[in-house]
Length: 339
Image 1: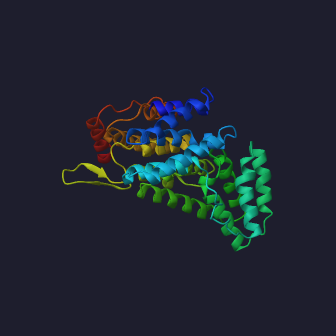
Image 2: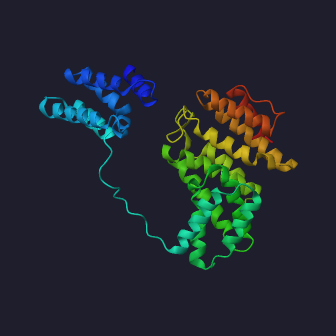
Image 3: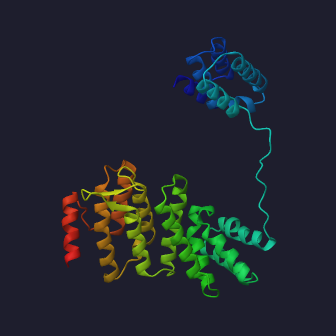
């Protein structure tokens, strides 16, 4: 812990680089056991900074070469050798260029991606988004162009989060002239379903963006009431089953994972205010009972998630009293299903 603290002080220029070099030199003089761990931790935290800095690059390079020389001459177990190699690679930038070549795309597809990603990111009002909509309408709308536009729009994770409302505005505007609305909605809902069925942490931010985008599409009347309700129920039910004792279990949504609670709150915060008439409000209140049971089935909610849920209830249904126990939620659900 101390060496990590020293590394952070060096990077923030609170401490001179010579302090890190002194500690590293002390570890290299007694290069065994705990000294190896300390030296590698220090290099992983501030080695790259020391190497990139012009004033300390030469000394850092000498220290790294000295460490690799000791590694080759000492008899070390595989764990220590891996630690040293990882610290060296973390400090020394790769000398090879990226081996992934740029994907070749037609000029028209590049222009579509430019409009949907870069130009949309520069929109700060609906009037600017309307200008972008006119530029998209001027494209040569054949079947291939339609496929490229739909593909660019459905890649929601590549669009800035605060611009998703304008993206939904573009979909609603283009749907008046071209047949893309149903295709976009189906593709986004299918992507959300895939994320619910596979527990992939790399998709979490994309899933939040998808929920925000689905809510914005509903606000522009691109979705009917039933699909959005089906989406609500899918988030809290997909991947769950009952075991031999009747308990609800899931491999993709364990009891200590509260990520789906965030998804529901994101979707409700985006489109919950548009459930205005009595029929829509009654069906939303029915879902909130099932959602509260889902929350109560979790072991515990982190403080930030609990505040997120409470803020959502205060905005969407401030007069609704939250259920306090699982038994109360089960009794309420039985009453709803019996009626």
